Image (cartoon, rainbow, N blue to C red; front, side, top):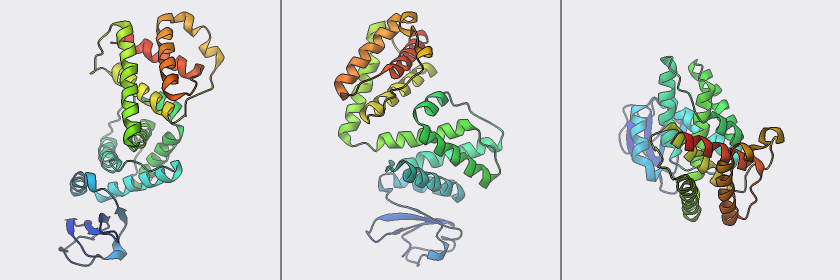
Length: 277
């Protein structure tokens, strides 16, 4: 392999067997090298493939971020793809790497950010959250840190978003339309304008996004605790009735029944957003 670009002392780009540009990481891989030199394949530690759409952003990160962190991101993404048996959208290489860099910097400074979506992540994305937990343990061992579980949740969110963004164009359009319709059902029924800068709005949109994704993928929750849901519709009749509208809408779009647990949590989120608009 011949070097086509030297990114820094530890990173170069070259062309693979399909003539596609790939990025190689390894200590000293680019040290005192120039275009056209042979790649020292014995020093290759990480390989980033198929990032043409986001190549410039990835190259910028590589120039600015310690190559160990890029290696952590590659490890986590590869592990997630294997365990979930899914292809993740390539943009996760940019977003997750950038997130890990700042997360590690914050941890070294003793700064921890609370993840306000932990409940949803743990509830609906158990596999991704477990990958996040394993990822934080991996980084903690490598860096001698103590990243909190909130960071496992943030990593899980990057994985979930990469799963969503890898949908085909028809699925993506369908999902976007359904999210918009559900938000409008709530907005027009309660005659409210959302405060799009609020935490409540952000959390509501994310819940709807997850809800629609699970509906499209036939992964809706079908179990629940009867005691927890008892008389829920009597306590919050208006919110429950709107959740029922959304239930009917979703069932007409997906032909998948939406049972009590999803309905109750949807009602709860409607209650929160309408009281914190």
